[in-house]
Amino acid sequence: MICPVCGAPLVPEGGACRCEKGHSFDRARAGYYNLLLDSASHGHGDDKTMLKARRAFLDGGWYAPLAEAAGEIASRVLPDGGALADAGCGEGYYTEKILAALKKAGRSFTACAFDVSKDAAKMTAARVKEAAVFVASAYRIPLATGSQDLVLSLFSPFARAEFARILKKDGFLLRAVPAEDHLWELKQALYDEPRKNRPDPVETDGLFVPVKTVLVQKKLLLPGEAARALFEMTPYARKTAPADRDKLAGIEELAVTLSVKLLLTKKACETDGARV
Ligand SMILES: [Zn+2]
Image (cartoon, rainbow, N blue to C red):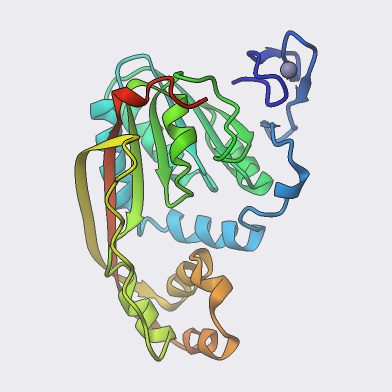
């Protein structure tokens, strides 16, 4: 970790971490550091309701095939003793599963996880003991340039320039993005005119080169409660009119398609050191 004020390395010291210039950041009792300086960013992350819905849904194991596939890819690409960062870790479900997969594969690692939401960092810190957890924006990451072997960005903002900056030469970026038919039936249940997701744009900026795409697909038969929790954890929860939202209130079960692309890319070597 580096100091978000001056960029010097942060060293843990008692219940805080400190840089050589004396900037100090306390470790919250819940086990995370708040390295977010910009007060304008406060409250921009996911709120507690959404995080709790996400935890309830994910702990039901519905997205386990996705966590397993991501863990398998991470185990393959992370060198032994490598450093990984989970950017936009949310409540920590994937962080925990992926680190467990690495341990199972006999891999040693240094891990950190961060989210712009303080509530998310708190939930992740309580769940994942093997990672340094902090509050930070993906667009201003308090990690040293060229320090990471693997960056995870699962359903979180794609801060391409920052991800390229913190990655080592030949480092990997693993993203999870919804495929076109992801949660299609949920949208059909909610909206009169549902739309498919737009296909992910092809990389054109030269920061990353594609390595592999894995499509994770599964039909889930969700009990009503799980379907409602799923809705609450998606971006639709904020955009849906109350009249449409009410359509989910009475349903007893819903068959939904999980369809997510795991995009593995590698940092393009010509960008090395180009962006700071
Ligand atoms: Zn400093």
